[in-house]
Image 1 (cartoon, rainbow, N blue to C red):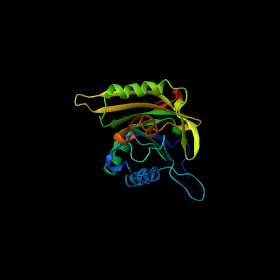
Image 2: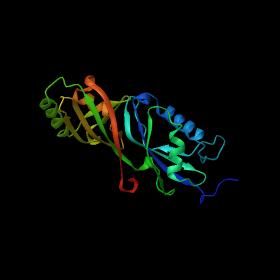
Image 3: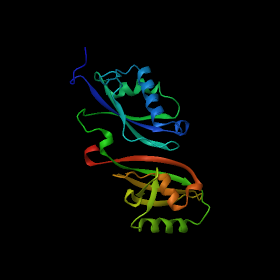
Image 4: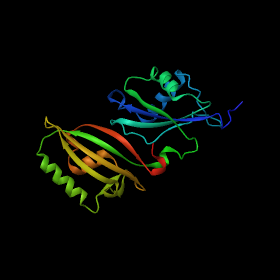
Length: 221
């Protein structure tokens, strides 16, 4: 018998995607989660139709080569489970590089995560091959620009509306960290690699991490 809507549950999983798995694709990440959930014997809710699939979705795909500190996955299950029990069973089945941060129950009627995403924040570690003040000057110049025409997949677009803020941090050892708050718009989402290219810093990048996903008020977690 197919479960009734009253018995189903929506759990929101916050997880970190580390160095060990930063080069797997979005599709492979979803397969990884499906395997882990099945091995943890989570009663997944499936779609109807010729090829039923587990009802689970990521807030927004993470580009290959980028790590994430607080990635979000919504999972629909057939019957209620305590979030702590769900987390306990799942932790033992996750591979190296995927770390469970938090599990919480959310209303099943909330809008899909993907529809509420407004942007994301990133940190990029870059080689300190030039004076910080020179980089900061380029940041100020970029932020004061009205337009930043670029091409993506052969089509022109304006990068500037997708950049909300940029900042530079320098630690005691002289390591540079570039912070980026990038938005999602009609032309797509702002990408950290394109911002780094625009700033002339792409060749010195040591690593990029998405630190959090930004949501509209209705989609805040």
